[in-house]
Every structure is written in C-alpha cells, then in structure tokens.
Picture 1 (spheres, rainbow, N blue to C red):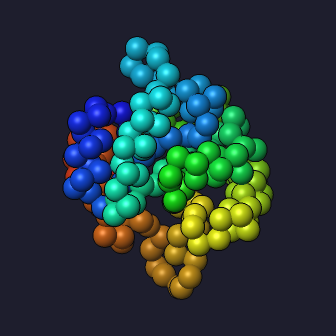
Picture 2: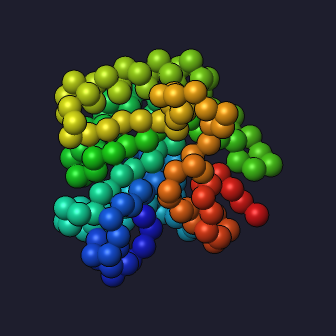
Length: 172
C-alpha cells in the first residue's frame, strides 16, 4: 500500500482485487511498520485505500499481522477496516523473519485462536455478509485434502524479492 496517488488511482481503475498489508489502527500499525526512514506509514495506507474503494468494482482487502500488540484488538480492527471501506480482512499470527526471531512480537497459538474466533463471530454478528474476517490458518477445512497451501488459489503474488509466484510465502 506504500505507493503514490497516481499508482493508487491506476489500481482503482484497472485492478479488481487488491490486498494491502496493514496491521490495524494507526497506533498499532505505525509501531509495527515504519518507512525506511522510520516514519509512520498508516497515513499513506489510509489515503490509498480511500482512493481504491472509490471504485465499487475494486474489492479492497487487508492482511494484518497479529502480534502481542493487536491480538486483543481484533474487534477494533474489524471496525477500523470496515470504516475505511475494506470488506475483507485476514489476520495471521506473526511469522519469524527469515534467519531471525519474532520474540519481540510473538504470541502463542491458543491466544491467537481464542481471540480470532471471538472477533470473527463479532464481525458476523455486526456486519453479516458485508464483511469477512478470516485467517490463512483456516484454509482447506471444508474438505479432505492432501495439501494445505494457498498456492492452489488462482492468485499471483509479487514476492519480497520482486518475482511473480503462486505462493506469497516464497522467496528466492
């Protein structure tokens, strides 16, 4: 979501489905994700989301990294994103960085699941079919499968190193 107004307008006019990495309200997002020079980034994301949601054919979703700083704020996140015009939110537990540790942000799986389930029900009760809250951890629960991977979805991803892949977890 960190791009120019011109790029946001082009995406609005030419792309049908867009997902932005955003960790929720500015107080959390700006703590977890700063620019290369250390500046907050939520204002740019909010601006670009606002531009893209102007086109009703452009479905704008968000993907939030859930850490100890927002695990108990998932209901607030749902309301925040809904207020921005986002209709789909995926919240996923923080992953350890390649070659590193996520201990500074980490939460246990039980806490994540308990809070996620409660927040998902909140979204259903409050917004019905007008908002979806999910997690990649719930993929492939609707039928028996031999693989549990999102790469079976028809969604190309740009990897962090600039390649196109069917997998958003793939790096060279």
